[in-house]
Length: 135
Image (cartoon, rainbow, N blue to C red; front, side, top):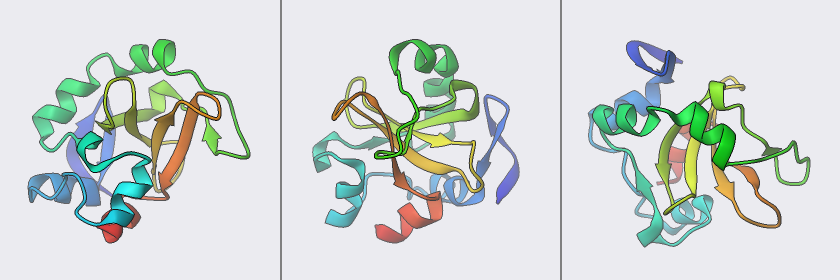
């Protein structure tokens, strides 16, 4: 579900993300289950918590994602790849470790870039709603 009017790079954002951002709840999780989902330590997770942050971080994202964050389909660690033109970066776990919405699915999945077992993208949550429930 999306809320009209709030788009990043021409993509409407999921209503749950818009609601969390506007309510000030789009920030690193409190509970361990939330941290574990990101594959990092609490101090590493940074979510882009304002509309301005999301807009700024997504300027040039498709070109950056296409060249800096490789991936290939991976059945063992899905999805493995990310279509830069059909994604929105929503946070990071430190330098060169983005978190994104994979807009190829409905609802969009939340994914993270991983370095091992080989570079690629892994699902963190099947939706923004699922991710927020963990926190």
